Image 1 (tube, rainbow, N blue to C red):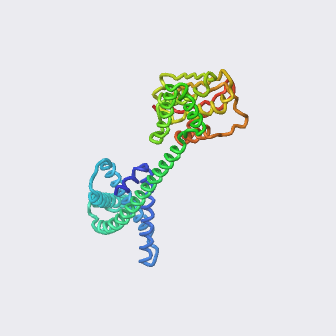
Image 2: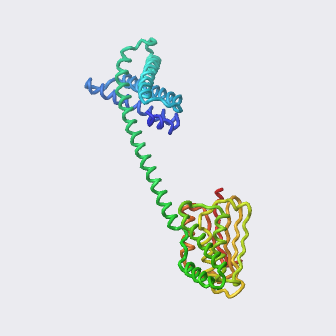
Image 3: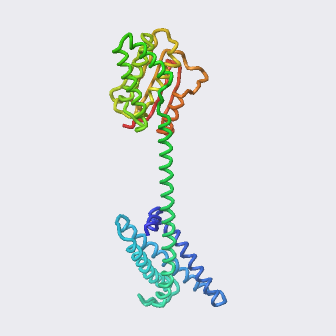
Length: 355
């Protein structure tokens, strides 16, 4: 019955009456055809019109009585057998009202006498038809409701499967520690052990923190801006040992954006790209700048450097490709990535502000 109820609320009442009114007309024509077949001749037009009036009016009164019932009980939880009982009750009530209205209409149209509640022969015939038709409708609607429930279960399972796939893809796209970065860092630590043991220890701890953040990155897809910046600062502190005074790092983070959520490990691969492809050959005065601010309910991230410009035919390395893929999985089409050399070399990302 709940499936039947849901179908009523999925359509306007006018549309429901139009559909079932046509069904009533069809029933009247079928009854007329059966009567003609039994009598082996076409029944009079007045009998056809009478059948159409009875079938259409009774169908509409049954339909509207059930609609009123569902309006009243839609927010109430009652046992299924109550639904069945009231369903047939509404059908019989609609039949009685419809039969009386039909008798009244035929009396007015054909100038016949009308006696209120004096049509028991019509009631007996209508009762049998209504019970049969209502049973067919109920089981038909029940089957539809069961099929709809199974379809919803399959759709839910499909959504969960898609979510699992998306989660797996995001975990795959989480930043991997570049082997070259690890190799260079370990070499730097090894050389510092004899020169500056404290500095070597500090660098080892920073490398450990970076690895811990990377390993734990599969637990959450989003992170606070301030946490992402902390890991970027850790990464740059390690790289500073290798670059020395050749590199200056500038960060401009709006206070309003510090506690906003962005994709985890979004910044580090782009910073790594800037160092590896832009500033690696810079002998002196290398500048890497990160700015993050709010603009019209969006987060604007800019990673700029004064190193080698982007080539005309940009090769999508792991850093950039993973950035595009990650943003597409998390935001659909609701993001922008701009790669430019003027007025300054930069990668600009615009994403919705989620928190």
